[in-house]
Image (cartoon, rainbow, N blue to C red):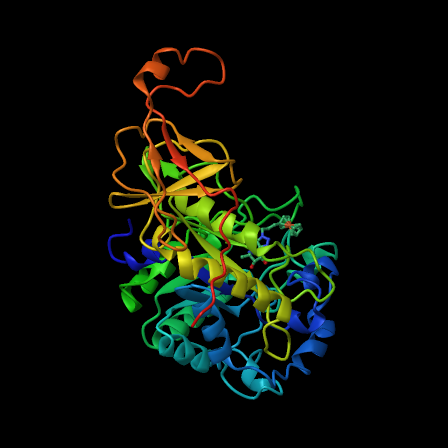
Length: 418
Ligand code: H79
């Protein structure tokens, strides 16, 4: 448990928003890197950034209806473009056709919906003239030596600290900060190497963050321990630990493999899979930060909105097994996960068995059982001691197994709202 911010692990579900100039390219937020686009070429997006449909109240509403408790927006991604009116750069929304600070209305909209406010800030910056060309820089295959002449990471570091100071000073209470990311050994063995703690001035930066926002939670990507760890696009095999102590963790996941709006990518995870990812995470003590990539006009893609609605429908009926819940010390049967809150054990069945679900070790331990979606009683069948004596054949239930009678059909999730 994060002592100074219990809200974080109680929330379990948040919304990540990736929005920037890459939303115009609409082919992945790493487009500048993947296509080795120069700062100059990339400016075609800066000149055309005109989000006429931007209404963060819609994002906030979609998040709330999906059962999310916090939202995290890319104030600046690796491309270097800033959504707020930073005094430290001209590369910002206020100098595009958008013509204004886009972070203030975002913060206001979240607060109005009772959501916690999160910022993502990229440590990497492919636009800043002092950020040295390295193994993930778009110009990594050019003459790095020449390109790095006159670049000075000390000046970039000052810029980075100044920008974080702005973000944490000018928008009231900020609950959450996601720095992205360190790669000290570089990527793919590229001779230009990578960046880490010394480049970012991580200790000093983190101290400033805590001083400006004492209640904030910060992730673990400064190459220093943070408040929580951040598996990206995978689910850990079990609770995440360090020296035998459980860590707070949050898996960030995409809907379709891309973080930024990716128009032609139709590889969407189904709401059913997304719910299983959420449940799997909570059963292992983690949060899910689920991403959407709004369009360059600022609206949510209808397919993303549909996914969020699907999750929301499930969470509305099953939230008691998610919010404030965590792992159980009991071991679930195959194709199932347990989540637990106090003395309530929640059994999530990923495959609906026929007739009964058999729960090893729970005989004599359960007072009452019900389905969560409609609070209908489930009848319990304690093991028959005479039968148990003979339960030595392969496939027989182990001693102490409680059987719970189920309806033949998995109950429908959706119920009419009256
Ligand atoms: O903001 C989202 C991503 O853009 C960013 N973090 C999330 C939250 C991110 N993308 N990739 N990474 C973090 C990890 C880096 C992966 C890399 Fe590669 C492997 C960089 C170089 C090798 C994949 C292959 C990306 C570029 C080439």
